[in-house]
Length: 124
Image (cartoon, rainbow, N blue to C red; front, side, top):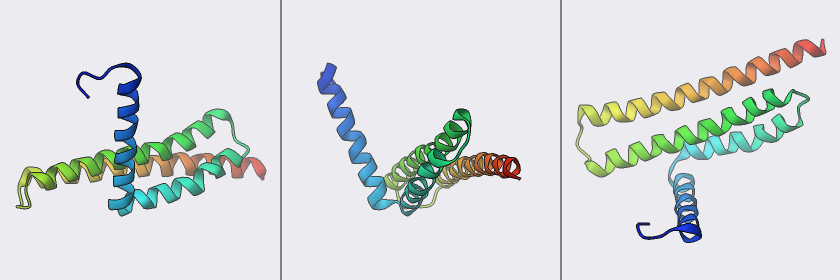
């Protein structure tokens, strides 16, 4: 994108982003599963009678999982591009990316469980 500025740069960047999302959806089963989860849970978060901050946390935590999964997929693609041979640092990079996804999933689970637990207690 060197030499491009203004609207042209924004349009090109949006195109690259769309290409990345299509690639993740086409090649990453975990990303597809997390998108499906978000498609189900985001409307639920919008429908539930919760405070705005709680709704933001619920939706934001799901979007964070997708962001971390995209970054993990990028790390895996770069490591795979470098070579098919086993190397300690390659394995570590992939493991660290996977751990980041796990932590984002656990955070989303904690947020959702806490809010739903509080909502359930308020209904009783």
